[in-house]
Amino acid sequence: MDPKMIGVLVCPKTRGPLTYDSATHELISKKAKLAYPIREGVPIMLIEEARVLD
Image: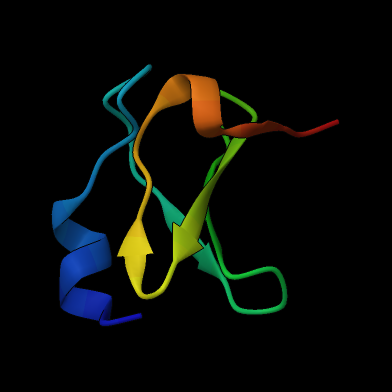
């Protein structure tokens, strides 16, 4: 994932920053405790598609 793109994207729920988890290929919102998937190089920024983090 391009670091410049990560810097532009924000969590749709909190409007906070995201970090990239290379192990799971997800964008992580620590504030919302959500992990947004990346499918075929495209981040899926839908709250209903996000995985809830513990």
